[in-house]
Length: 228
Image 1 (cartoon, rainbow, N blue to C red):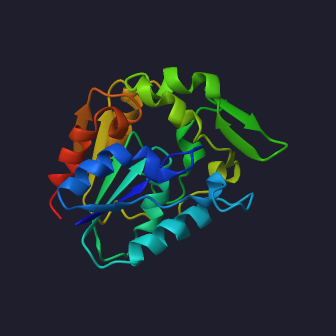
Image 2 (cartoon, rainbow, N blue to C red; image 1 turned 180 degrees about the horizontal axis):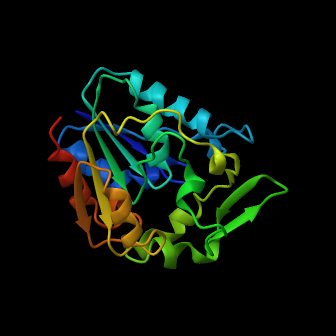
Image 3 (cartoon, helix red, strand yellow; image 1 turned 90 degrees about the horizontal axis):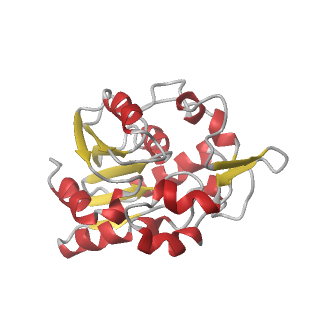
């Protein structure tokens, strides 16, 4: 088994965000990879959106025939919904404080009309990002020791991802699990439970927005216990 981790919005260096959980998986002989998302500026080309993110993740999924679990965090769930379609190696989808969109839905479908207070939107530049001063209290309150490292990995993301709907969805054909983060200050638990109604299985953890950093053993155990 291998795990493909897909990070959320407005960050870069995906491998770092998952490193605590990935290390525990490696101890059990499970490899993992965290593709870069072009819309977060990791390719150096501005203005790239959901289509490019989907293509980047899909290429990684197609690179191996090994049974694969795909874990999408926050915005990453929208990417994986489309990227995993028709990939035979994908045996399970896991959404962490994330979304399971149907065709025609996108990131803006799940948000309020006005940007969340922790987001900074710059229409002129065509980007949005997390307000640095709100990162720790909103997203990392249960793992403050990593806040400085996380701050260095914030990224400005292309606004184009907000309005781009998914064209196909994998979760309707592939077994899925939704991990509700009950102490999440970014995406309220009540909203997550509504999203989770579309998943095959619901698991709840008393964690903030990044349980793979704050409670890596619990996340690793969940992944290792999946039928693949």
